[in-house]
Image 1 (tube, one colour):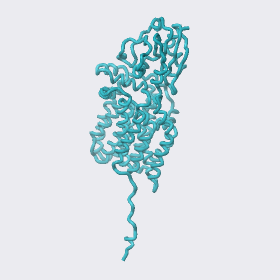
Image 2 (image 1 turned 45 degrees about the vertical axis):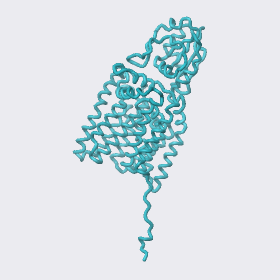
Image 3 (image 1 turned 90 degrees about the horizontal axis):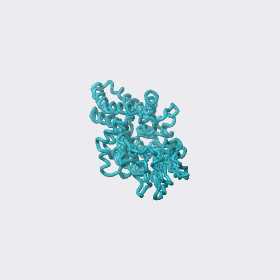
Length: 476
C-alpha cells in the first residue's frame, strides 16, 4: 500500500554556494584589483612610497620624523618588498593581495552573520567595485588597511561566538592602527557590538584588554601624525555637504554607490541580529562623520581616500539585504552583482587608463621633445621623481638639480635657487608641474623662468585634474 509519505517528493535542499567560496572569490577579487596595475601610471603618492622604501633604515627614520611618520609601518614593509624590484606590477601586488584577503574574510563574515549567499554576494560586490579596482592597484596602504579592518570585525565575531581568539583580535586591531592612522575610525563601531558582550563578563574581560593593547600603535602614530600636521596643510576645510559624496567615494562611482548605499540601509533593517546590524551600520557611516569632526576640531583631514575602509561594509550590508529576499535570494544576489558591474563600467575603464591615477607621467615624458641644449625645470621638486622613473632616453639637462638623492626630510630634491643663472645661454626650457595649465602662473619656479626672459610657446595638460602640465618656454 502506498502511503502519503511515499508520494511526497523529498524536499530539495536550498541552492547554496559551496563552503570553499571564500577561496575562489578571494582569488577573483585579487585578480580584478590587479588587472589594471600595469596600465596606469604611478602617481606622486606611489612615487613617495618608492622614495621612502628605497632609503636606508636611518634614512627612513629621518624621513619619518618630518613627514609621513604614521606611514612608517607600511614603509618598513615596502622596504623589504622593493628588494624584489620597483616595477609597477610588483609595487602594486601587495595591495591586490590585500584585496583578496579582505574578500576572503568578508565572505566568511557574511556567512557567519546571515547566510552563505550573503557572504558570497558581499565578496562579489566588493570585488567589482570601481574603488577596489583603484586602491587594489595602488602602491599605498589603503587596501591593506581595508583588509585589516575586515579581519578585525571577523575576529571580533569569532571572539563573541566561540570565546576564542582574543589574541588574534588584538593583533587585528593593531594591524588596523598600523596600516593607516584614520582606519581606526572604524573601531568605535565595534563598541556597539561590545554592548552585547556586557552580560558575558568573562568574554568582556578578554575583549577590552585586547582592544586596548591593539590600539597602542594608534596612540603612538597619532601623536606622530599630530606633530607632522604641517605636511597636510594642503587639505581644505570641508563642510557637512561633503558627506553627500560619501557613497560615491566608498564605491568609486556615483551610480553604484547610491544604489548600494540604499540597499545597504535595507540590510541594516533586515539583519535580525540587531547588535551586529548597528555595528555594521557604524562601520559604514561613522568613519566619514568622525573624520569630518576631526577636521573641525583638530585640523583639516577630510580626504576621500582615507575612507576606503568603509567599502567592505557597504558590500556586506548590501549582500545581507539581497540574501534576505524570500524565495528569490539567488536571483536578487546575482542581479545586484550584475547591476553593480554594469553601472561601474565607465569608472573601471578610467582607472585602467594611463591617466587612471590622475598623473600620466609616461605621457608627460613623451611630450618633452628636447634638443641637445634644452633645459628642464620642475614646478614642484617631487615631480622630478616621476621623470626619473619613466624617462629612458637622454632627458634635457636638469639645471637646478643638486645631487641624485632626495632630501632627507621630504620627497623633493635639493635644487639651486638662482634660476636665471642656471638657464644662462639656454634658448629653450621645458617646465613641468603638477596641476592644470593655469596653475603655473602661481608657481615660484614658473615665475622665475618668466623673469629670466622666457615666454610660453606651447603647453600640454593630461586629461584629469590635478594632472601634469608640460610647457615649453623660449627666449623672448
